[in-house]
Amino acid sequence: MQISPEQPAALPKAARDEDVTNAITTFTNVLESLQESHKRLEDRARHVDAELCRANEELGTKVVELDRVKQHLEAVLASIPTGVVVYDTEGRIVRANDAATEILGLGRTDLLGASNVEGLAGSAADGTPAETLCSDHVVRVLARRYSAITLDGDAPAGGVEVIEDQSALVRAKERLHRLDKTAALGTMAGGIAHEIRNPLHAIQGFAELLLRETEGDSRATRHATRIKEGVTEIESIVASMLGIAGTGELRVESFNVRAMIRDAVEAVMQDREAPERWTVEMVGPATTIVADRIKVRQAARNLVANACEAQPTGGPIRIETITQARGVELIVSDGGPGVSPENVDRICDPFFTTRAEGTGMGLALVQRVAELHGGGLELRTPPSPLEGASFSLAIPSQTAHQSPATNAPSNENA
Image (cartoon, rainbow, N blue to C red):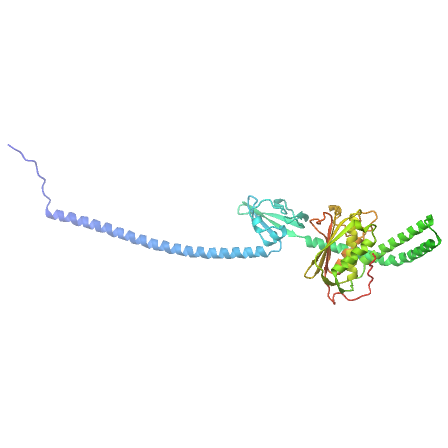
């Protein structure tokens, strides 16, 4: 007998319909849940997008404000007349204003990124004024101060060096000191000139009488001659003192500077033995200025005489004329030994000299003439083209209201 396998009983139709309905319901619920989640995600995405848009707008506003603040700070930094140099934590320069580049004699591109710059002291700056050789080979009196930069929590963030150029202040103090000494010299000169000149004239008169009574090359003749020479030298010193301490009034006229210099050179060479030992070169255009011709010629004469005395055995002398907008500049150079650094600040002081035969009045008188005209006398650096000293005399052209005519003594023979 063959037995067939048992067949499963078929589900009733109602049961099958119920399963399908349940599946559809479940699917519908899941779909609705997914749609709700999707909607919430879309709402969230829109909210986040709106927040991002607002954040971007706020960020953009802050960037604009920061840029405006940065530009303002840069403008403030640029307008500060004092030099400002900013360092990073490695000691490299990251920012410098226009005043700093001008004081140091460098361009901004030369400063940025550099760590050792001539003229800067960095963290060693203590505010003490000191003569400093800057990168443009100019010696300036600089007062430098350094301050460290720290962030929150005292974290180091570099430093700032502030540079103040006090050269003009130092020059003004020196000029005031010089004027004080000139005033004192004037008081002394005015008081003693009359007392000295009266006996000097008597001595000179007796010396001349003695010369008339002596003959040939006698001992008395030599003594009388030396007495006259001494009287002349003393008279020259007194005249120089009066010239330095004289009034500030000028006799002005229009004159040719080249012709005035030629007269000054001839006057100097007339007093020299063997004047051919000195060769004088005149450079520059012929120009005309309005000034006190006698005083300016006296100043030029003293500068040329100073150049001769700097090379007593002879040598080259160069006189350059430079026409300026307000006047003229005379540069007198020699081939002598130059001026030693320790004497630079004293060479124009009355009675200061490094020569046994000198009176120390020549350059002081030149400076006085320059100051009366509103100009100046400077020892030029670097040295002259002749390897010696080179003096620059600036004489501004005058106007009638600046320079009333007076009867003040000119002391041309000083």
